[in-house]
Structure formats: structure tokens, C-alpha cells
Length: 117
Image (tube, rainbow, N blue to C red; front, top):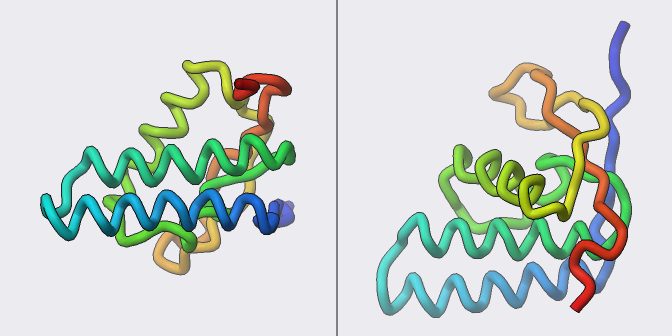
């Protein structure tokens, strides 16, 4: 049995939020150099943008929208988002990274109202 790839294309608002995160990331890394702190911030910006979009998503949906961050930090930020009550795990989908040979990645559903300001 094979699983279908679950996709959540980014909306224009999601892309704009991630682009804003990129801008802050580029400014900081240009003046301070690369660091896990800035990688974590841009990853969290992407996760928050997808949470606000309101549809189930996985790392497949935003990995390509990020600058070159350490990939291991993505899963740590997703765990952080779960603990913060922004998302919950709802399933699995095959990874779209060729190097993973279709390993499964988690699918997360946003928790309604979690990021209401």
C-alpha cells in the first residue's frame, strides 16, 4: 500500500510572510554570520505562516521556501510548535526529498485560534 503525497500549496499571504522572514534572515546573517538562532527564526516564521493558512501541511510544503538551514532544525521547530499548541500530528506523507527515498514525514494540522493575536 502506498500513501498519497499530501500537499498544502502556500497562499500569497504565506509566501509574503516567509519572504519577510527571509529578509530578516538575510540582514542578520549578512551582519552577524550564519547561526542556528537565525535558522530557527526563519523556520518558525514558515511554520507560523502555514498554521495561519489553516490547512494540514508537512515539511515538504515549506522546506523549499527556506534558505539553506540545517535540516535537523526543522523537525525540532515542528516539535516546538506542537508543544506551543499551534499544531497537532494528523498523519504521514512520503517525503519529497529524493535523498530520503520516500521516507515518511509527519503531517500537521493547525490548531484553530492558536496564533490569534
